[in-house]
Length: 128
Image 1 (spheres, rainbow, N blue to C red):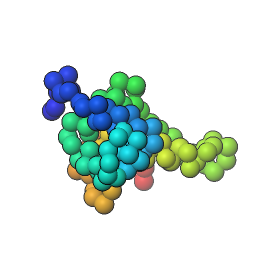
Image 2 (image 1 turned 135 degrees about the vertical axis):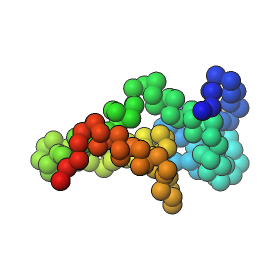
Image 3 (image 1 turned 30 degrees about the vertical axis):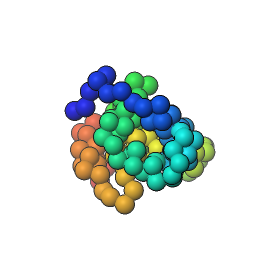
């Protein structure tokens, strides 16, 4: 595992991390951070130390794997009544945090998803 305290981020990398967390859009975050090319956003997302920084930030603010599992369970069990408001907004937040934590990747199935599913089943049981 990477040790973030040993890693110094560049000014642009720090800005990219902040803007990506705000928007969830790597291309826009890269341009706002000062990179000249939109593809720099994707390149930053492939850097292991940047991926680790997202996980670290999420854990620091209380977005743990257990919290994600509880949120997903509540959403899955909610009916179409008033329990779930602003579904599209909630979906965007869930999608963003799962990507930041490394559970979702575009175009590829994450290796971590198996363990995430196993942890979810272990914590909450499997519905038949």
